[in-house]
Length: 120
Length: 110
Image (cartoon, rainbow over all chains, first blue to last red; front, top):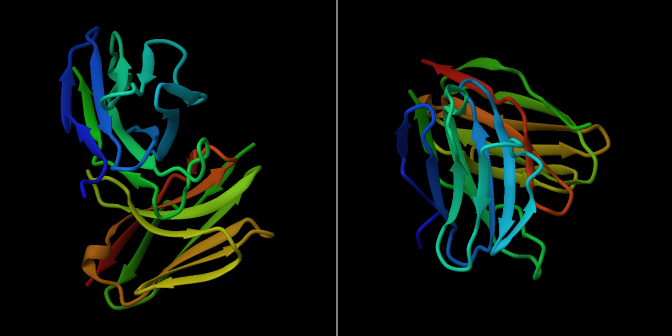
């Protein structure tokens, strides 16, 4: 039973390039969350998605960042025209569904290993 | 607004007991989590409290008082491998979004 899978583990991009981070939730989980952890800081919520829907993107920067969770395939966090300040660890978490629309949090809330983005 | 406070650093001795406190202010409280995070790794789940009281799980226990906006994580029989950051996080509302504190870096010394 694979956990939350994120790839790549490490990603190096030059300033101005695009970064695409992928997250496959645990089997049976339909709710995906993205968090960012800047060096020496805590995790900050970015976006919450269900299949084909963005539910809460209150933590996403207004420009250059976007996320999707298509019907088939992993969730993607996309950062366009990266800058040095985007260098961070990006973690994805997933949870099962409590009902058709609500997540069941608790010990089912599981994080992936993260993608460490370095912008040079 | 929403605010989570925990000490930045703590030091303890191998074999001892340590208590890491967390205070929070949030609306729509829907549970409090503790995660352990070793450097360069993902947060791993330790405990979840939604009702007042103490939850015990092996060497780790977590306590919650909703009226005081207060939680603590208790680690007993400390081992060197317990040196890590301990993250307190609150779930606010129905979306499952977690609000994290800055984390407490615990150093266990021989």
